[in-house]
Image 1 (cartoon, rainbow, N blue to C red):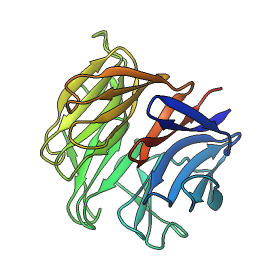
Image 2: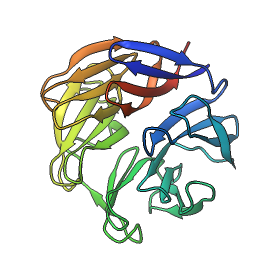
Image 3: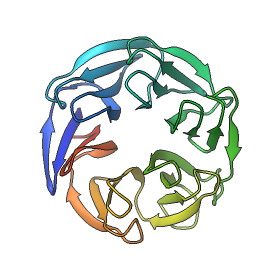
Image 4: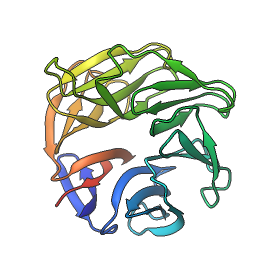
Length: 255
């Protein structure tokens, strides 16, 4: 069973509007308009809300393709990450999509564009940067071995400061790393070593952020230097996003 839940401060409310779909990502263009993507059997679907997530309608179906994450640069230009290096691009508010390949056989986890030309993407084990609208992508080094981690989610507070969550299956006793950059993704350092898989991170400003790890939502008030165990969500979270000052949406699976 898959759920979409809302966090308001320390309280979670469950909304069963995507029954039987494994929801992987949610993105709001503003306080009212949002998208969610979910996979079921051999098809994936794109859903849209125009009323702050109160109701959702299906706008596209993709067969034999897994959808992993969605991002919109502006009102019209959007990106969806898929498997085997494939990403989809839309120029009409998500009603039609064109397929592209980033140049890897790995599954793409997430993609963010800061301008129409400048963007960053992560696969399960690599980081990529582009400065020409995705015509060319360059691979960026990680601060740990790419053979023992799986990159799970990325968040940028601005064009320079960003974070990447990961799970780790090495022999160092760490189950998840949180990486941080302050130069637009060119260099990354370890910000947190955790004893649980880290699935998503979201910052409201330079100091205040939330971090999904396992079935809990942790928070920080000092830019990620320290994290406080927060609300019990009741699901294994995949993604989270802020829709108002005190309200967040998170998607995942569980009962």
